[in-house]
Figure 1 (tube, rainbow, N blue to C red):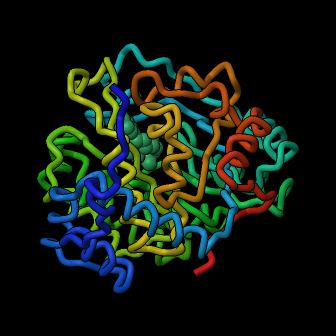
Figure 2 (figure 1 turned 180 degrees about the vertical axis):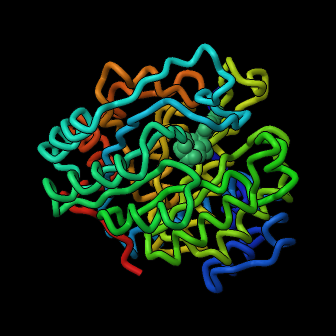
Length: 364
Ligand code: SAH
């Protein structure tokens, strides 16, 4: 039987307003919401609300950054760590982890390759590895600065004293990423051993900001035991701290951690959080992270459509990439590899975006 089109019988497309949409609009207008409002957003949003949020967030991204997506070359220079975060594959209790340390010369060669390719930000990330004393770190930072004065150096090396942070800053680092992981003290205690405390992390973040770093915090989405009320705390924290950068990604289990059997966070909830962050902090530097790319092959594109404006390809030497295993199946090949920038540019061009050769500093 032939299907007959009966337009008069299909209801008009209803752009009906909902409580969630009202809250999304309010967040955009006032850049802040109450705890209850965030909980409502996180629990009541429908796929239609999600689309509405992505439209608003994508528009906001374009308003502040046009069609430009910033890239950062990520150098994972040590997989040794003294901490024991329950979620992380690099935790000290993981006897299966493959440990390595790059020498200063090896790190500088990564930068050399990255500079040639067009990277103007180097992110130096590692476990909390005491082998890299402040003296060694400062020498490394100064060497990168001397050789590539037009580049930005971002550190992501964990909790340090205020004096250490100051020393790295004086040596030439201008940005620092230190995710707070969760702003709920009870939840923080579920994810970390007792010697790691949320208060310490928050103090580190305050110190970084006071010193003058462009400071990045952030959290995992869907980490074990996380509730909507806890996620709401993360938003309240971002709202008051107002960081220059925010890194979020789905929790992904690692087989050799106590959370091996926990379910991963979802791409959908991560995208929803990205959208909310873009509206709350309109000019924030917001990456579509590797973890998002790991659980969804189009994670980066979807992240950008939800408001993200930064991508951090892997610039580590290829022989160590498989050893920096924060979680299972972490991607580092294909378009995730810094050297495949042409492929990444093509993917960005396909969604109307460009990758400029520039530092991409916070412009607040
Ligand atoms: N030692 C540095 C770098 C940590 S790795 C520091 O403390 O900042 C960078 C981030 O990876 C962490 O902050 C954490 O949010 C994320 N991460 C670690 N394990 C993860 C997992 N299993 N799933 C998803 N993200 C994870």
